[in-house]
Length: 145
Image (cartoon, rainbow, N blue to C red; front, side, top):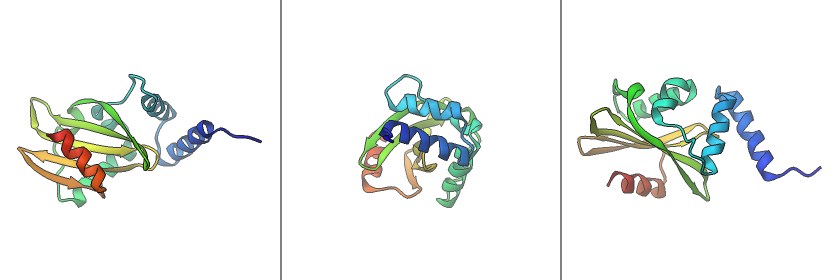
């Protein structure tokens, strides 16, 4: 029996989503986003509605010594941006405090593994969170500048 890579990837994403509590609709949305469709989620969609993402995000920034801002659930944001390389498909999420984007998160998210890492900016001061590669740090710094 021959299984295509695409159906194998879709099955894997579905399996991981069931384990992490991600809904099928959300998995479908990430798949559409990765194909270039305009249906990419925003941080303000993901953070309050996806408990697995929110828990991981909160824990990752806490471990980095970043105090969770009260504006996260009602942030200003742009749609997720596809980041694709040898490491796989990941997405860049941007969120900032409403009416004050000198307070912002640039977050790399891998919906398959649930990993979250990124850059927090507070009035020009930057702090990385999560385990970032040198390439990921460069991507985040280029988005900030």
